[in-house]
Image 1 (spheres, helix red, strand yellow):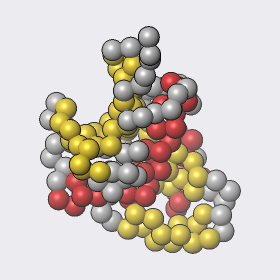
Image 2 (cartoon, one colour):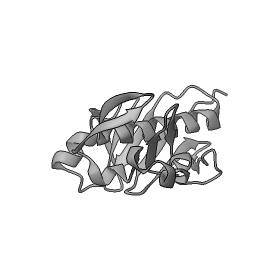
Image 3 (cartoon, one colour):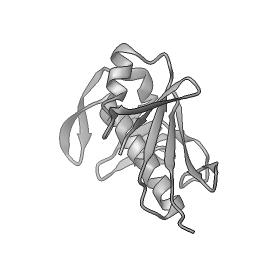
Image 4 (cartoon, rainbow, N blue to C red):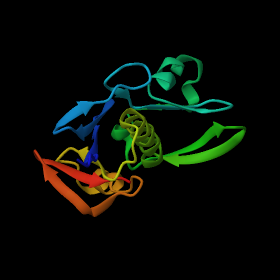
Length: 158
């Protein structure tokens, strides 16, 4: 009997993200590297590395200038002058959210320990206009692969 992974599903909440995998005819919610089922929507840039999720949130007080959170609230805006590895960089909120999504996808891949053939992200049904267009800009976002699941738009992000 051949076993395969159908989907990684990522729920883009406002403050938290959640990732699950569809396998064995059910959804399994994946824990992050801090053993939590939700991922904080935080990205932080230190002098030497980029931190995502809990690690970024935990050092916010020490590095507030280069820490971003709840990126979905900010989609469509630009951020200038982020200091990362002694260089000034510009990021959009789509870039920041994509970093969180990439971390979640990598966590799910490690959980299932297999190559992922399909992965999808959900966004709220009412996300249209600027926000909807921006989330279609996530890595590999392709509206032609969209489907509808319980009123949410689902898009391939691989």
